[in-house]
Image 1: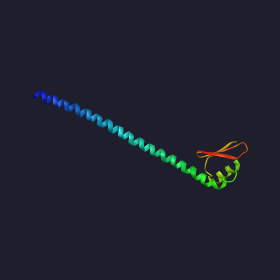
Image 2: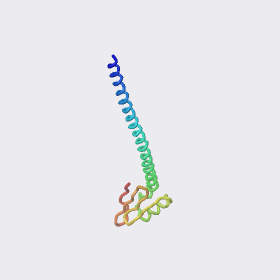
Image 3: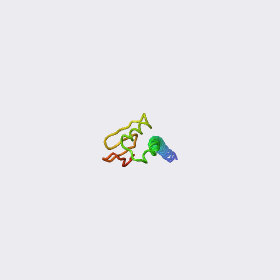
Image 4: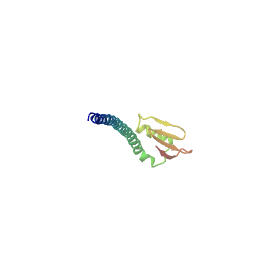
Length: 114
């Protein structure tokens, strides 16, 4: 009877250690998933804020874009509406935040991209 109890006790020891290691592995995996989800939601919030900022800029420009605008007029309007924003301008495009206003060779606005 002593040998059977020793084998049974040994089986319980193996089961205990296997379950303990499995519990730790699952706990670490779940902790990783929670942290990953939190980081993802944070980045989504930042992206959503950027999109709202771009939409606000476009809403301010909408009444003025309905008529033909030159590149210098657009830069002037952007600086007037967003004096602290970083605005880039070259021969064929104007950029503010994530928005790009693209002009043709004649200086007419042809496209707005993000």
